Amino acid sequence: MGKHHVAATHLPFSSRPLSVPVKQQGLIFRSLNQLNTWVCRFMYQVKALEEVPVPAKGPALIVCDHSALGDPLVLIATAGRPVQFLMAAEIYAHPLIQWAFEAFGCIPVQRGKRDIKAIRTMLGSLAAQEVIGLFPEGGLDRHRLDEGHLGIGYLAIKSGAPVIPASIVWEGPHSTTSMLKTLFVPSKASIQYGKPLEFPQETKPSKESMQSCTKEIMKQIEALRKEILSEVA
Image 1 (cartoon, rainbow, N blue to C red):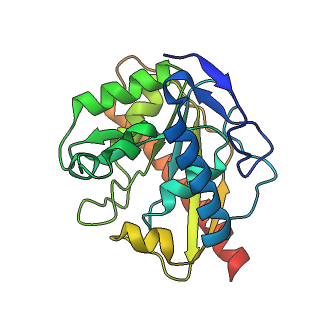
Image 2 (cartoon, one colour):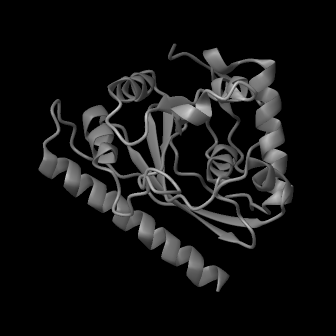
């Protein structure tokens, strides 16, 4: 499960060849990944990054703010490694598009409650040296929590994986409800990654540790967002 094959399925927005887990080596993944690269380059005007702080190997948590449906697409295109995301179970189960979510290794989660199965799946992926992408607010709608879910701190401390904070700022139209508008209405996205954060690993993370960890991650994300806004202003 944890073995990787280095294959230049496309050149992402960094010079690093894309290291693809064995379970994702397939035509569907390669085709969708290439399509996503084109969407980000030509529809979102995403610029190539000089350096991506996501480690080339080993587990990692990318934690990013969330203001548009296109956010996961930008992260997938720029991280330099395949990224698995949590996804609302009701969206994941859509019969017309579930195959695409499966190709990218998305993890369904029951919103509004603690989903033990999803947590175990994420910890398993991190143990298999893979990358998990998380949006700490939990969503774009009524499920959103601006201060960040403590589950972010739990995963970081329980797994011991480095946390890479990130922020995406959109200029122009960006949808929070329609995937069709997300894919076909031009916009501009600016992304900034922060330096990896390390937190002491605990077998049973305490509430205080989770709160402190989550607060620090959110603080770094906010700083990145302010940096982007100062550049685009």
